[in-house]
Image: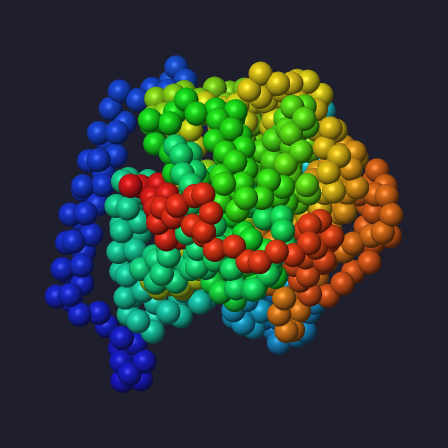
Length: 605
């Protein structure tokens, strides 16, 4: 080794390296032993050869292959096109090697952060690797998309898992083909890989043999300390939820309190991350008496809690508690995601019973018509549901990490592979980020409720069929919602696609205002007023047409946050002004400070 190389290449300390590797070996042995013990006697979801396919992927790809081979001419044309692309790339790369100039045969999308390092473009070697991958990925996805004769569900599943494979095989995910990782390895003498191995083992330990990738610094945040900090009090609780009433910051408030029903798939504090991006804090500052449902993180004792129970012990119980807490019978309400699905059913149930306590309803990224449920429908078929129900019935609930993995797969490059590179290949600690801390704070699903939700809504789409769903003995019809309704969707939503959520405009019979925000399921909602404006939103006057694309063609775009637009709408339904209410000043005593106990229970506890 030359003197110059000695000065630029760091060698690891052999003693420290030996200790680290010994520790990793010992911890790995414990993980393997724990994993094997868990597998003892486990046979659910295995075929006669002992192979497991709980997602029923094999059958989908077998059907796709059979259809593909039935048209060999098309397969030959696809192969020929790929080889022609390879030849064009080789010619372009050869030209660069000889000092000439050449245009790229294929380019990564601007939003693709996997190839942001300059070496992917400046080095003809890495440029060749990158373009070979992009050409192959494009060919694979187009080939499976063009197979004739597949039903929609099989086609969607094949396309989804092909993309998962393509994402996993990206050259950025491997040491020898990622220039940034190679550079870090040379500069640190391989310490990044040793540290990455430590991170990998730690994640396996935390997941008890299953990989539980850390997305953020878990020690940087604490619920109630630097997230979920808007002042308030828990004023009511039952088995399924605590009800938080937030302390006023204005002298007067709208007469009608605001009830927020968040999803129980995640925790409510997505709406109260930090003061600068807290929707709850902002709503309080607008002169609203804000109540929020904080759902319990259920264990096996709540296995039989049903969708009916979530309605009766959730929003219905909250309405009674709000009246006792404020003396006000009438409220405005918000439902977010599955919390919105619950509220849609609740409004219909209340209409059938002649209960008019809710005076306006707002839905954030809420599905009620599941006919086009987006990529989540990939996970909903009879084989997968049966396997999932078997798992839930044994435990009494669905592990929160299973739900988190499902959602992360929808954006695998951002929410899986970027952390594999950062944590395991680069050997870095994840960056402190409040949103990712919340994303990692998963919740469990009671077996009975979750089975009902998946089967009756995602699989059978019964919610939009009048009378097909009965809650607490009452058949419901969503079209009985005649309330003033604000429907917020987000244009890049992978969980509740906006064109599917738009169906609500054709179902509800009351005046419906549809608002389409930029970005996705979370960032599009949590978009506070700021300078400069971050995303923007679209609105349109008049009756919403049946076709969502026609609605968008005639919609007006506004820069900035949609929050003021919603506040202006809600003020018309606020019922006038009254003196501000303080938690505990009426018939409900304060139980504890917000955010309460329920939200602090983690899925691993």
